[in-house]
Length: 386
Image 1 (tube, rainbow, N blue to C red):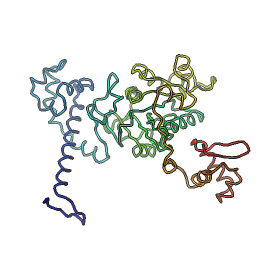
Image 2: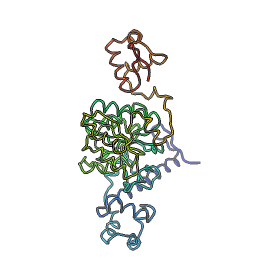
Image 3: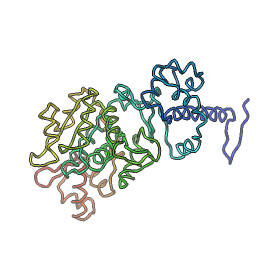
């Protein structure tokens, strides 16, 4: 019978403890080998993938001899020597930091590596992941656009993301100001999943004001990057980041973009990767709509509602209504108003009376619920759940 170990009043099965320790040790070793290969300066991501594919795993690469590695096409003597000496690199502090802040390394061969990303020309060799990647993240839409979004653009992106997330679609974006931020919040408000792809390390909050958003995404999806910890958001990182945003997605929807916009770089990657491109039309007098309106002229599908996207991609509809109320991010006042509208539409005066809130509190709560797409106003100051 296995020995029972007691620690601070908790009973442990010693055999189980040993197994867990062994599994953790294996995982750390696995992380170490992926990291070691990724850090070799003479090997880019493409070459690292080629070497691992040749041998079958990072472990087998490091157990191979010089002559065995030399059989991999395109490797010179210096690159082979760097592989042979890689295990001398001290990355213990980095691995400790990864575990401390809850970052997982996901190599391109692992089952959790997003399958959509494997279909692009140059998928990342490894991903740094905070949060969780899931199998259902295969049904994905990227929502992107300008950082200098108008109120119209932000409300549209938020509603589109929220509606798609209610159907079980994972929303992909870049956590930038403007449209990206609105899209992530929309998915979170629906109790859905969202993935933020960063142009910096996953331990760097950029922009700084999105700290809370980043925390919520980690709890309800994932924050990912191909850049190591502490990488700053350099300008040249963002085109690389954009190819991952489109690569993770089945389609890219652009909400507000001027003619010179990073969102259009994402569109170019999407077209190269064989993804569908969608665009929300905008005011012809607004510079922020020039890019999206041109996309529509050039063949992008015009989007007015989430049905335009779902029909084009033939996604299975997965209604998220069950338990929806428990997942909504609502203030106490918003919750009270939302609950009062559960049975039937009510006049604003009735809401004031029944809620015991002031007229201004009710009006403010209704406005915010409308913005979140949860409530709509009917003629005569009557409100109903959307």
